[in-house]
Structures are given as C-alpha cells and as structure tokens.
Amino acid sequence: NAGVTQTPKFQVLKTGQSMTLQCAQDMNHEYMSWYRQDPGMGLRLIHYSVGAGITDQGEVPNGYNVSRSTTEDFPLRLLSAAPSQTSVYFCASRLHRDRAYEQYFGPGTRLTVT
Amino acid sequence: GENVEQHPSTLSVQEGDSAVIKCTYSDSASNYFPWYKQELGKRPQLIIDIRSNVGEKKDQRIAVTLNKTAKHFSLHITETQPEDSAVYFCAAIISGGGADGLTFGKGTHLIIQP
Image (cartoon, rainbow over all chains, first blue to last red; front, side, top):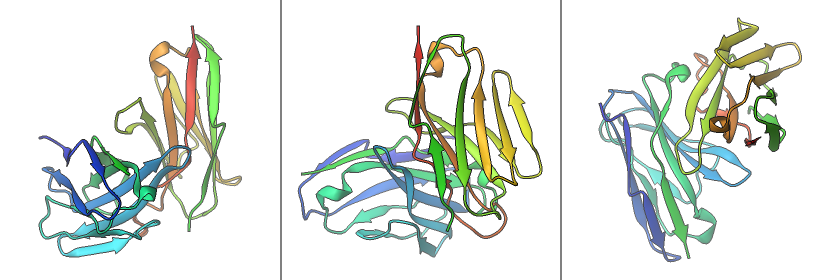
C-alpha cells in the first residue's frame, strides 16, 4: 500500500490564482480530511469527508472547496489564492470516522502565495 | 468546540535527561488523546496514544499520563537521545461520538542538547 499520497510537494501561486491539491489513499478508508499547519498554530482542520459524496467544514474552511467523488480521492481546491493561505497542507485518512486511533497523514504540500 | 492548550512551546534538555510536555483540554467528553512527533519537513507520525479509560501507558522510553478530573495529559520521554529532537503535538477527540477532527495543541519544539 502506498498509504496517503499528496501532490504536488511544493507549489508557488500568485494572488488570485486557483489550484487543486491532490490527495489519494489506497487503504479503503471512509474518512479523509485536510489540515493546514502554520508556525506556532499546530494543525487546523479545513474540511473533512466521512464517505464518498459527503463533505463538511472544519475549523478554517473559508477560501477552500472540497469534493469526494470516490473513496480514494479527496482534492482540496483553492478558489482565489491569498497570501494568508501560505501554509503546509496535510491530508489525513482513517478507516472510519470513529476510528481516530488509526489516522494517517500524507507527506504534505508546501504552498506559497505571493 | 474542543480547545487544547500545550506547554511549553520550546523545551531544551540535556541528552540523557527526561522531558515532559503537558496538555490540557476543555471538553470533558473527549476520550482519545494521541501524541504526534514531527521531524523537520516530515509528516506528523503517531508515537503514542491513550484512551480515557486508562490512566497511564508506556512504550519503551515514552509514556503518557491522563488525569480526566483535571482534564490534562502529559508526554514523558526518559533518557532522551538526539533523535528525539522534533516538534511534538498533542491532540484530543471524542472518538466514536461523531466528532470528526482531531483538535491539536500548538506544538512543543523539543531540543536535545549534546
């Protein structure tokens, strides 16, 4: 199993541009989520999905969209990038929403918005 | 929602000494408390966790204690080694209760001095 994979590893955007961060898992996990990590702020939940076709907002959802058309993929879309979205983004998955003790993180995407 | 406070933000100890990182949580319904280690440029990795029906858990040089009454839990690392240098995050969640995202502390940068 590849586990949780993310692409790209690094990205530089200009203010106003849009892009999609990709996340995929091959463990047949129902639950997937996106976090952003900023210095001194820990990891904050952006959006999550408890299964294909079901998504919901986390703590910091503004400026981001998600969709979950398949069990494997959970892309994160930045609609109009802003410098405040400069961060490291981690995708995470676990078997089921109630199985928090089996959560796995992807390798991260470092995004810079200029 | 849940709020997790973590202290200290930076901890420097001599190699071979012990290190203790403390976290408090606000929601008495939280019942699962993982600790993650994040090396520079890497993804967070689960190192130990504890559930609310247990007061202490050990795994070789690391241990976690939980005080449900006071709503705090701690990570203890004994006989510290250079490879213990990293950022450590605590987290809390109501596992099985429908809450979906781990709430993280802001992290502790542990520095092991040779």
